[in-house]
Amino acid sequence: MPRQVLLTVSGLVMMAAAGGLYLGRQQAALSETKVINAIADRYVAETGGVHSDCVARPAEDVGAWLVISCGTASSISQYWVDRTGRLVTPTAGPDA
Image (cartoon, rainbow, N blue to C red; front, side, top):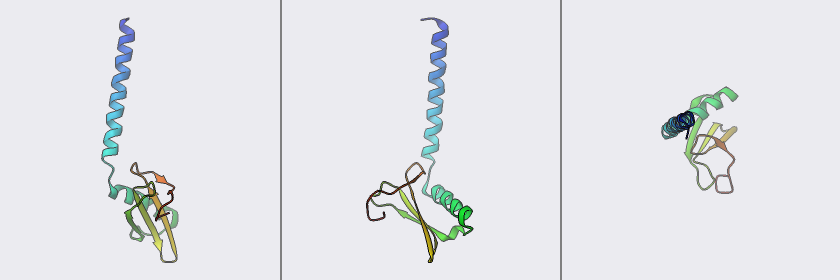
């Protein structure tokens, strides 16, 4: 195998390994607090409400990790979040 091909393949493998480590560390550092704060920030930006309007609880059998409810008695928004921190649409279940 030519030396240039071997160096190119080695470089690509090292870049893939570094990218995997970086993304793995980001995922491992994801906490409930970070997700709740991010959703609360989104709620405040969209509605002008306050962070204390938001509460979270574990999701139960809906394909989500957390259910974050934000709002007042007259208007409540619910956000379903998966383990990667993305908003998801709930599947059938008690929370849906």
